[in-house]
Length: 279
Image 1 (cartoon, helix red, strand yellow):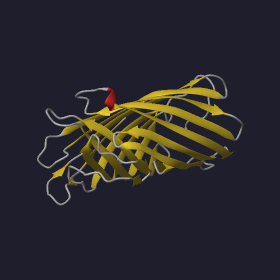
Image 2 (cartoon, rainbow, N blue to C red):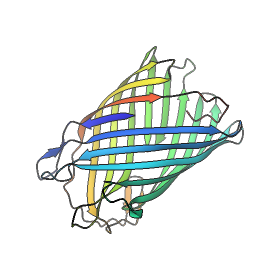
Image 3 (cartoon, rainbow, N blue to C red):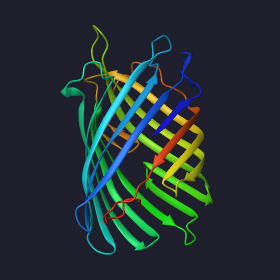
């Protein structure tokens, strides 16, 4: 679980500002089938609160995603993870089938050594603005003394940290693209196209035999919540690029801002053997 807030996002060219509040709760539960296969289940909940216009009231945005997939070890070196990601994303004022989107994730993993793993794959999702996809190139490395850790799945996430006993210091990055339907009374349905890039440093405390991680972050966030009409879409979104994008943005763009965030993670041991999902 985590809660964060930007200090002040200025509206470009028109003056005024807004803060962006965000709360996330995520659960992933592998269910072992045998020593080589495990079902992946879980759910993600995301909440954002901000102003789209300098004079407007704050808007609440929600997203609930279910996770259902399969993690499999095929050899000592090769493994795969396939996950279906259906979600409902809107202001939750008038939920309908138009607020439902389907996404998915496919990863192939190659374990070169016990402490070194490579990832290759794709993420794709239907969004309010059209279809979005991105390739994923990643690496996981843990030093022989278990102190230095590098976990990257670019261009989505990256984390580099060093453990100092009960404390860990680190830096991380995240880049996301998602959308939310927005409903106003007596107005056409709109949607928010959200692009977020965050860089942060953090201090983490590892307690209860490293099962509970308490993390405090400070960083810079380049968030943009662009508002468009429901039928104003792109042809295809690939990572940071949009193909066939001639949309008319209805609200002013936001400048980046410093943000702070507090996180708590709980990790548990499975009672049966399962494919390694912490890598």
